[in-house]
Image 1 (cartoon, rainbow, N blue to C red):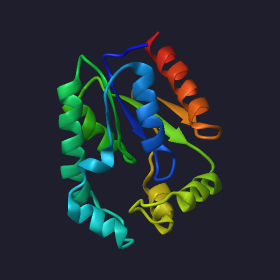
Image 2: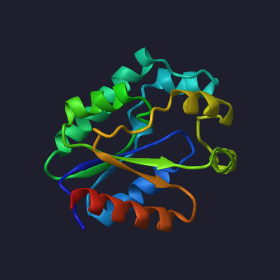
Image 3: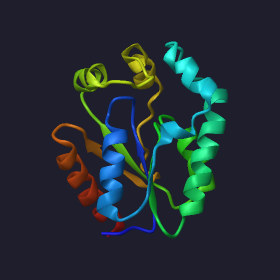
Length: 169
C-alpha cells in the first residue's frame, strides 16, 4: 500500500510514535521524519528539565513539521508529532491540507510503563500528566483515525494500515 498523503502519527509521549512511525512508513512505502528532530535545542532543554512547552515554544516546531509535510504533499510521507491540540493540528493542516492523523491512544498506566522503560529520551515521565491535560481528541471534521497501542509494534502498525485504508475507501 502506498499513499499520497502525509500521515501525522500523533499522541501523548510514550505512545510509540517513534516506533510506529518508521514501521508505518515502510508499510506505506513512503519516507519517515522524526518529529523530535524538528525541535529547536531550547525546546529539548526545557523538556529535559521537566518543564512543559507552551504554545510559543511549539509554533516554530509545528511550522518546521508542516513545511516537511507540505514538501511531501502528493508523494506521501509519515511524520511524528504529538499534535495534542486541535490548534496544533490546524496549523499542520494549514501547511499540508491533505494531512491525515493517526492518533495512537492507550491506557495511561501502559504508556507510563513504556516511558519508564525507554532509554536516552529527553521527555521525563513526570510530564505525562501535562500531556494528557493538553490532549484534545480528534474531532469529527478532522481526517484521521485512532488506534490503540496495546500489543506489539507490528500489531499496532497492522491495525493502523487497516484503519488508514478504511479512511481512504
